[in-house]
Length: 250
Image (cartoon, rainbow, N blue to C red; front, top):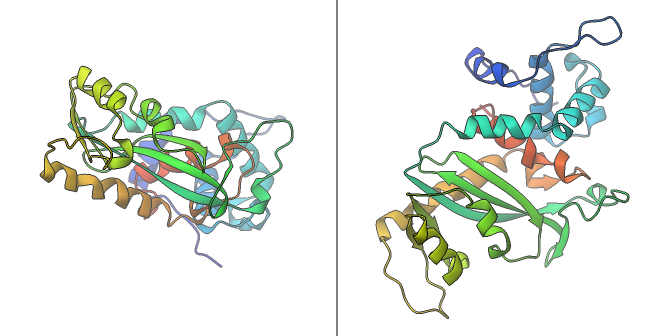
């Protein structure tokens, strides 16, 4: 069996103030947050079904209920936002990657497509990410697998001002470039072969490896490399990125 996940004291001290207080249920104290968060990371890393959660973490139903509640109430999204404030705002790098959707991820009843589409490899979800100048995640957005990156580029880069922005030629849009320049950004985006050539800072362009390394890191978590959750809000977008950004994968 995959070894158990244990957060270091430093990691927990960083996360604990960002979580809601434990509340009594049925006259009993709620299970402490720390083992629950460790259980969530174990599920994320191994890709195992919730029912296979080791008994050391307690009943899987309790862990899943808290995970789903935190996702629905925006606790995990708020956690991501709080951690993302500690960023290097000198520059930002944007990219996207596709992950296959497991057959169990389909079929969420009466709740829309849940950001699952069909690309060349079958059912899939596309992960759009912006990382800061140190490679730490700033914003993550899910979309169905087939749309072009530019469909959500404006959303992912919303609020970015007075910084350099690096992206490959998939983001070579006159509208996006103009929008970034109006916000005081230095645009370091590769030129699409169908567009007039633009001069860019080739040294900064090499920094694209930071966002590529970010994707490589999070895909070591099997529940990210393959999507299993039916609901987009329960997928890794609202959860794993917070934990990756505080180094909990170690």
